[in-house]
Amino acid sequence: MDLTWLPGIPTYGTKAYNSFLISFVSGTYSGFLYSIFTGVIVGVILLIAQWKTDSRIARRGYQREFALLKERIRQIIDYPDEINISSAVESIPPVAIKLGDEIEKFPIDLLMDEFPASNEFIKLLKDVQKTRAEFVVTAAELDNLLSNFVRKFNISREAIYTNDKPLINYIISRLNGVDACTAATTVLPICRVSDKLEQGYLEGLKLDHISNQVKLYLEMRANIFEKVKLINDYLK
Image (cartoon, rainbow, N blue to C red; front, side, top):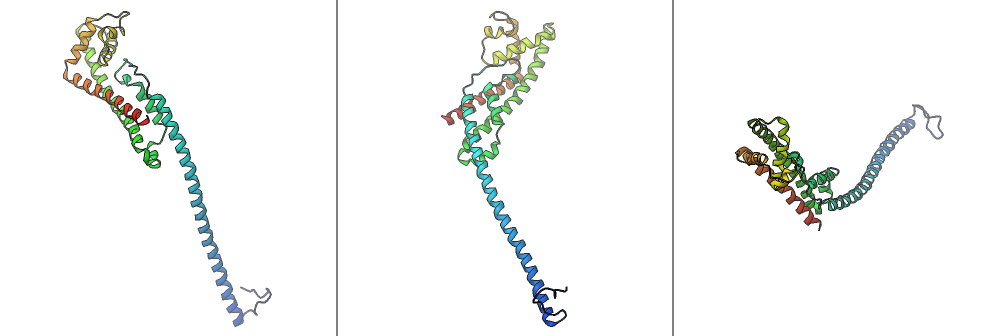
C-alpha cells in the first residue's frame, strides 16, 4: 500500500513509513469497528423507543376497545329469553349467542395480560363462552336422542316421518316450561291440549337415557343465565 503521494507521509519502504502504515491501518479499523458498535447501540435504543411508543399506542387502543366491549355487553345483557323450539341446540338463550358473538371479536387472553385489574370480569366472559360451548354439545346429544325416540314412537302409532318434527317442537317447548296448551299451538292452530303430543312427551321422559340428558340440558341452560347474571352484577 503506497500512501507517499499524500502530504506528510514518510518515504515508502522506510522504517518511519512502516510505523506510519501500522498506525494508519490499526486506527482505520478501530474507527470502523467503533462506528459499527456505535451504530448498533443507537439502533437498539431507537428500536426500544419505538417499541415503547407502539406499546403505549396499542394499550390506548385496547383500553378504548375494552370500554366499548363493556358498553355493548351492558346493552345485550337484558336481552329477553326467546325460546327457539326447532331443536334443543337452537333453544340456546339468545343472550348467550349475542354475548358470544361480541366476545369473539376481542383477544380475551391478551386483555387479561393488559388489564390485570379486570381479570375477574374477563374470566366471566370466558366462562360464558365455555358454558355456551358446553350447552351446544349437551343439546346436540339431546336432539339426537329425541330424534331417535320420536321416530320409534311415531312408527308405533303408524305415523309417517312428517309427524316427527311437530312432536320434537312440542317436547322442546314443554322441557322449557311451556304449558301443554300453549305448546300445542306450535302444531295446532288453537290452544288445545293434544293427547298424542303430551303422550309422546311423557313417554320420552320415562326413558332414563333421555331424562338424564334432559337434566343435563336444563342445567346447562340455567348455567348460562347464572353466568349472565354474574356479568350483569359486575357491571352495575
